[in-house]
Image (cartoon, rainbow, N blue to C red; front, side, top):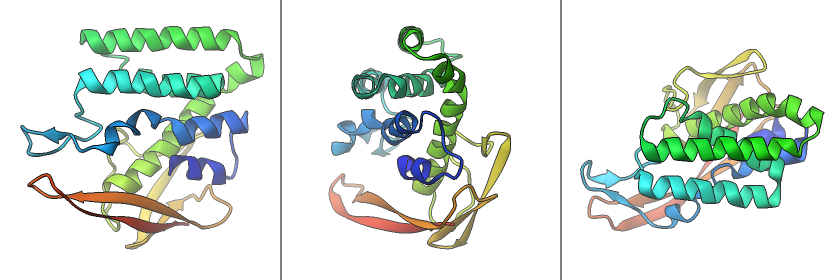
Length: 210
């Protein structure tokens, strides 16, 4: 989802290929955990990415960043920045160790970058964040709703522009101003799980972005 937004953005990033790869694969860490539903006994529902157990989440995130880096070091650095930035104020030992390890990764990877690549890092990181935020808006809210999901409760901004998101109907989302040269469709696969933890079904939600 985020990768499709990145590919269609009007004024794209530089380097384009590496940055779009980072945006498209920044959540690679969740591919394996998402194959099975992990149940939150306390809240009697599946865990979300927000409350997933640290002992499982942090190793998965590191593994995902490792995979992206092995394919494209620049993309790996962007993904590392994405996860480490959430933990700048962390105090729990596991989170601090993860953050510091990723900051070390970023320093190592930046040593192999050109001056232009380093200069564009922060802009490309913000580009990743805005694409991720819009994709979260689509995935975490019922079509037609108006809430901004965490971790972007303040809205969505990039290059000094703040984008307003509004549902035109229950299948069409519009952005104001619109960063996309033309409208396009996206598909969101999902599964339905009952309170008895049994899989009730799956489907694909088709939406349009204008």
